[in-house]
Image (tube, rainbow over all chains, first blue to last red; front, side, top):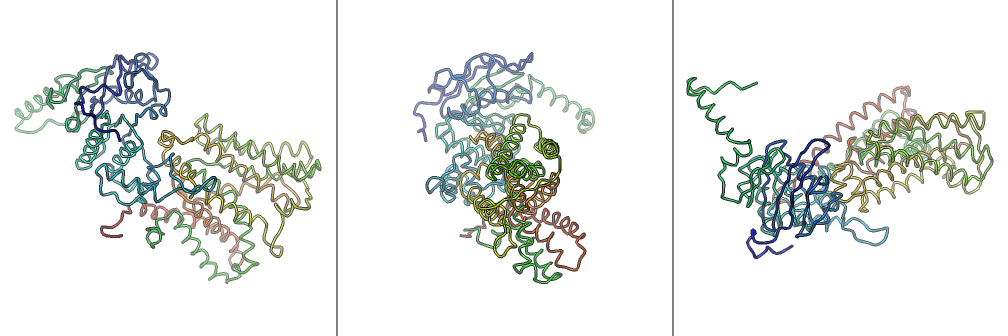
Length: 282
Length: 334
């Protein structure tokens, strides 16, 4: 594991940077002039409502799509990721909402998919179940999920948070330097989400650069060092921890002061209708 | 190790198949006596199981990987007719016939795999197309070349002994030995070598498997080649065994092998199953179709038994799979 960098996160040079990235699909412009940086040991939260371009941005960073123009830099040098594989080899690991794991495989087997440990020789090499299980369980426990003790358990039997944690532990184990988490807490309950947030902090402590995509402001504020709000494909705000309040961020995401005005509208309605909330809009 | 305990055994993919087989054996032991477990009776269902099993295992692997191949129904007569035409009608060496028959199996498998990868059309549809296309080729070419729908073939020497003879007192087909040997080979590659893991990963979540660096396209091709070549192999051996080949027949292999695979605990949507389970499922199917002859029942009832068995097996397998999913070690155990 890379030691945590000694310089404060904001002074270390960025691992991954996007400079003036644009992306259009045919006539539709999805991303405009995106410039972002993420440093080792830093959590960059990408916030945005549905359709703001978050997932396109992830796909550009993970090699699924290529930018129409603009530059991706890793460690200061321009790079291209023609396939997800090249991005992965460069140390960029993406964990999707449901963990990208195999529900009916054991923890040990799914942890080592594609890089199975073996013993024996030549054509008689056999899959080393004991080693795989032991390494997988240790990797997950080191990330703070101590409830996983048996590598033979099926992944589908884990809770949503445990599956996310398993996927993150896998990425960390195989040497990821940049971790892209795509809405890791969206489908989780409060307690499960806390688990995942703790794992994000652990990854950060180990010096990984984490890009945390979410629309849950609370979760972002719990772990984020640096925030970028995407609105209609452009970075609408870019600020550091403590520079904005939760309400300000929520309003930004909703595209202005609409949340505050909605609250005022509801309160006004309740005041004039004897405390009843307005009927749901159809 | 948890897999030794009774609960651990029930959570394995072949649990349902093993219990189903025991139930079927008890059923026929009660209604038909123990004749079908004596050597003469055993060879009747072992022969059926062997021919089916050689096709069912590669088909089951395809299903574990999330694909399906129903063109095996046309590959059996294709393999049989190819060896009969090359070595019987044209009188070339039997080895030439065997080589051509298996090569056609490889070619059809490559075409199936290529179409599935490139078009992303569900493999059921792709192989439905190749099922009819190959049937057409077999019928058209055979009639064109031989002016007949049945071609005779006489084989002697080692080729007969290896591919199409009876062993152990003249009732057991040599295919039974092939089946047992191939099953052992598949068990090793699927459950012990690292490659097996790739098949399960592919069926579990193809995109994640590809992202994890598994060559999913190449693996798909290999599995399609394996299933259609196995079917051509079975057809070829039958032609050598019975000294003739017909253009029809073989369609029963489509449903029979799918039944054997599903009874064997393979999940239709992929990602779960085992070779041993398919092996048990194949025996179960063969015992039901052949065991009926040892009872007083009219043989027409065997389809009813198979239908009920299939539904029962699927429900049972679902239950066991849920048990496997919800399993977690108890606190303090071990």
